Amino acid sequence: TIGVLAGVLIANWAKVSQGAAATLPSLAIPPTFATTSGRPWLIPIMDLPVWARWGAFLPALMATVLLFLDQNITVRLVNNPQYKMEKGRRKNNMLDGMHADLLVISILTFITSIIGLPWLVAATVRSISHVRALSIFDSAGKLKSTIEQRITGLSIHSLIGACVLFDKPRAILTQIPKSVLMGLFLFLGTSALPGNEMCERMKELFKDSKIAPKERWSKVPTKVTMLFTAIQMGCLGAMVYVKESPIGVLFPVVIAMLAPLRFWLEKSGVVKKEYMDILDEE
Image (cartoon, rainbow, N blue to C red):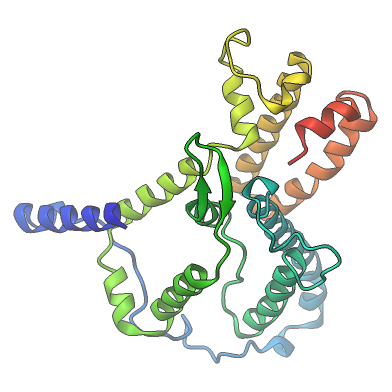
């Protein structure tokens, strides 16, 4: 928050002191809450020809896979045992954690689809930053527990809703330069990397194994760890390439192929099961 306010003040100071030439592009938001083209709020689904309804089946299936995986990946990261939370980890509770979250996402996806609003999915980076901000550490820097509450989540999303529905909050957001927002997103992304095992293993590629501290996966042979990390890096590169290419709509297919790839690595013996259980435990 302090960084965003400082960035906005500096941008305004530069605009006042240097003139219009120093004006930075700002966030563009419609002045009123309405549909972009002035269409009715309800989507006229029945106006589509029959062939278009059947043709939408494959894209809809890929979108379903993307929503399902994105939601579950985020929930698994947030409900990681290292945060020592109880919510989401109570046995035989079908309305707890992952089940309840996915139910809510399904209902909201149905509602937003019939009125033509963007789908709601789990914000991975922001969710991880949120749960880490609620973590309590001891004097040695080890995580003791996490404060489980709903106040901050409710407050954050109430403010988001206010920015969507009311004119004055939207007017305030239009004063924020895009460069400030990009810096905020960059900070959130980099701050979420520490503790990520893939990131930690990537850094180990440039460390001297003789003096580097022992990690949970140190019992796995170094060559196997390096091979598995290289495969993960390759998968990450493939996802970024497809997402930024003209066939970006196939991005969910790449994500869906990760599970079969893991299964093949284990069954083919490229990575033994006992090693895979350690490397991919989280």
